Image 1: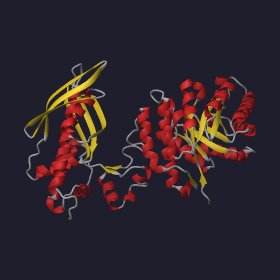
Image 2: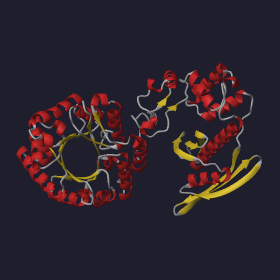
Image 3: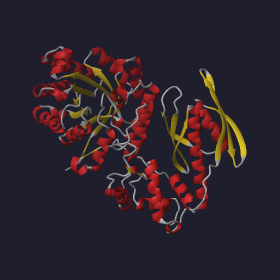
Image 4: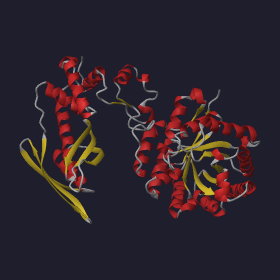
Amino acid sequence: MKKEKVIIFDTTLRDGEQAAPSSLSVEQKLRIARQLARLGVDAIEAGFPISSPGDFESVHTIAREIRDGPIICGLARLVEKDIMVCAKAVKPAQRPRIHVFIGTSAIHTEKKLRKSEDEVLELIRNSVKLARRYCADVEFSAEDAGRTAGDFLCRVAETAIKAGASTINIPDTVGYVPPEQFGAIIDMLFNRVPNIDKAVISVHCHNDLGMSTANSLTAISHGARQVECTINGIGERAGNAALEEIVMALKLRPDFFKAYTDINTREIMRTSKLVREICNMPVQPNKAIVGSNAFAHSSGIHQDGVLKAKKTYEIMTPQSIGLKENRMNLTSRSGGNMVKTRLAELGYANTDYDMAAIYAKFKALADKKGTVYDDDLVTLMETSSGEVVKDAYTLDYLVVSCGKDVLPTATVRIIVDGKTLQAAACGNGPVDAATRAIDEIVGYKIKVDNLHIDAITEGRQAQAKVRISASSAEGTFVSSGVSTDIVEASALAYMDVVNKIARMKKFKRKVPKKTGD
């Protein structure tokens, strides 16, 4: 059977943005839109132009700036003013689309709209025709289609197509319909709507019961050829169907779905990170495809399998979504083979150590601290050989000046090899200033990937524990610092990172890059 294309309609900037902690600026939306174009989405729903001047400007700017790529779409109710404003907003686009919608379930028509079915049909007919006067590409959505009576939904779709809609969207607006029932709705439309061949059937599924991706994929199996989705699955309430999940399911299972997309999957992780950064919406570690644990292996059995043949526990490669590699977490569940492999990667030969003794010490350390990092292994090896591990740098003095309308400035004094060195720096905040001052002395290029603060005691004088995850050319490092002063705790954690990097640099000078077994 020939594979058919599934249109990826991204609504991150419309439905997804509604769930963000604060509205995005025009510039922020444009950054995301440019990345969505690089990702290869077929359509970008850029916003709801009538909702605010800012949303109108965002849609209009994206329509003007995003060229040679996706359809640029704006949303409108079946209201003349909405449609006119939307038409104006998307007009600069090379491929504009007006997306109109109205609630069609009984609870929407009777309680919200207070209109009869015939009145709703007349409104659909007139509004779609109006939209077609201004735009050749019109999409119609039957809001809450999942709870709409079958006979009426068929009449709604037929009416919208006759009026000029070329895409009919069937939303499960409240995430209520199970996949088998949703598939039956799609079948019903294909079987009972006489002009259904003149339109693309689209779906827009919400995740209130965790079924959005399953419903979207089921709809594709039943003939839907457009899916409305968002990056990271963000959106109203529990969110929308996640673009990355749908795309990778189609990519990995073409034998089952008989469908494909034009998405450049190697841009998935870059897009995911941009959206979470701009929208200030973190992704849970176990999120499918883009979560930090999606390609991480902690189980010793899994790690051993992946070392022997990656496909034993990885159905896709990290590289296929834009990651460099998977991550093997060294924990108390890791087997000896994984520890041996990591030591070999660090440059240790089998003859350099007693595996049984090192593994016993590794297990004890892993039970104590959870995850064992490369620098922990190096320290373990050094202490096993009788070496005393000392810090190369000691924070001797720290003073920070900051406040309202004051440029944060920090001065630090650090002891290095018996010498005392001092430096000062400014920053965006007191912690930034302190770490910049430390950088002036140590000269390392350190990127702080995450800084997390917890209060470990109660009251105004509570002790703060700062946990820093940072990376450099030498690797990834996790350190912590404790103090009643948050800035001091942050500086101590950062100094721990500095000393771990110093140990790794010393170790790499001692151990050849390639060592045979």
